[in-house]
Length: 119
Image 1: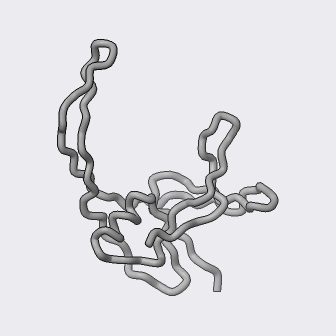
Image 2: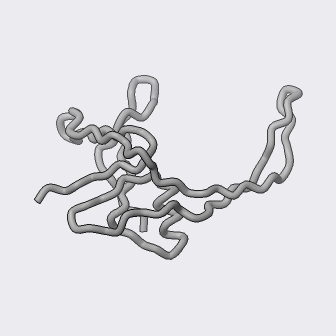
């Protein structure tokens, strides 16, 4: 049985073979990405070149709901989402985050060579 990867990030994820460097899977995002609430508390401002820039303290809130785990099924999520799930006491080994990024000549991430579990 093949593994099913469901992309719950807001963008496509390209998986690159670490040996050949070719894209072996391009995973489009689902219509409803996994989100985590962010609580922001304003601490003050900095003035840079005459412009006030806010400084905030950010705390992760509750993650959005997920489908129940199923054999052979994994969900690709952002690192922030996986950490929020863990912080809320719901460890899930079926949540994967893109790992070992591939970058273009300008340093932009264009894909990943694998996935990681946040525990």
